[in-house]
Image: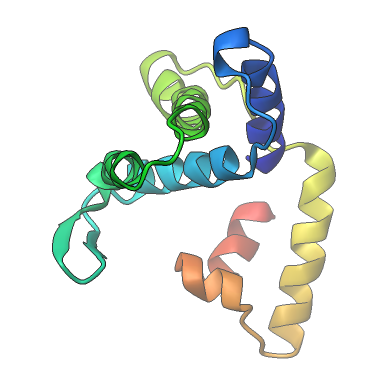
Amino acid sequence: MMIFGALSLLVLSAIPIFRTPFLGVSLVFMLLYVWSREFPNAQISIYGLVTLKAFYLPWAMLALDVIFGSELIPDLLGIIAGHLYYFLTVLHPLATGKVFLKTPMWVYPYIVFITRLELEHNLSSPCMRFLGFSVIEIYRHVL
């Protein structure tokens, strides 16, 4: 996802209207957008004042950036790249059955290696806990 996001942001930033020198904010917005689509019903509190569903979080953050005077272009680039990724990995395969973006096969041995280490030493990585994955579930899907 990160490689696709970085490449798509580089391509989008080559368009003159979307030109921006730094794409870090755009990459964060891409991750935020994809997460908000994967967990649309999660309740999010913004500054402890407003609670809303995660589905609306990218747009609320965009509105906050407008209020605080930040540029809109990096945020919009991230939302566009995130929607492109979500469309190609979730929406299009559901509609047509054709998958355009797959995880490369060279990634799977690393996942198996890390999973075996975690199982042998009874560890659970913070990243996996944060994402809500069980190591055993990942192990079953990979093999």
